[in-house]
Length: 173
Ligand code: ADP
Image (cartoon, rainbow, N blue to C red; front, side, top):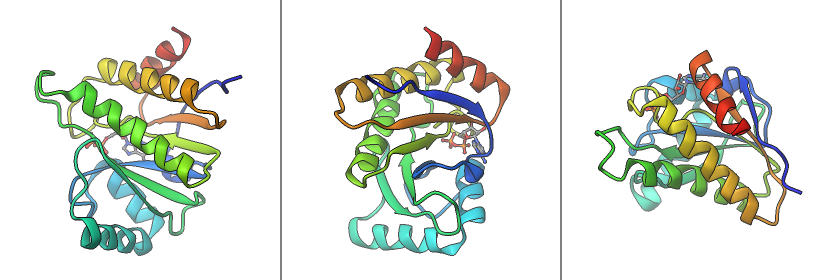
């Protein structure tokens, strides 16, 4: 039996899950939106973790994901993934966004996480249309969970009513 996915409206920095996902940028040095909120709430340990990763493997490419400590947050890990900037929809944005969800879940499984919380990746500063992003997010997670032999609780932690409604519509579809 696959556990059903959940959606809620909340601040992801306060959400209790083994891993929370950050919508980062390729430099991993922090930015605005959810990225800034996670670094502010989690403290400097998260940035230290990001810097070590950059020193080891360079920047994080769009669609890829890396994992660090969650610092002062109640989560054990922060999984940083880089969503695509919306560029009209013909620059492989859907594939790249799907990779974010898939690669984040892979890392969560590899690190023994039983619960993961996602923000609505790319739907802020990166301008991805929220309805399109919701479809990709839910479909990709659904497919991953179907194929996985591990049970993972996945929650979409939305920051605004519009995203919450769109994700809920996809969950009920
Ligand atoms: P991106 O650059 O990937 O678009 P943003 O951080 O600008 O990243 O936005 C991604 C989503 O995260 C947006 O829907 C935004 O409303 C949401 N967001 C911003 N702050 C928080 C937060 N504290 N908790 C959960 N979601 C947040």
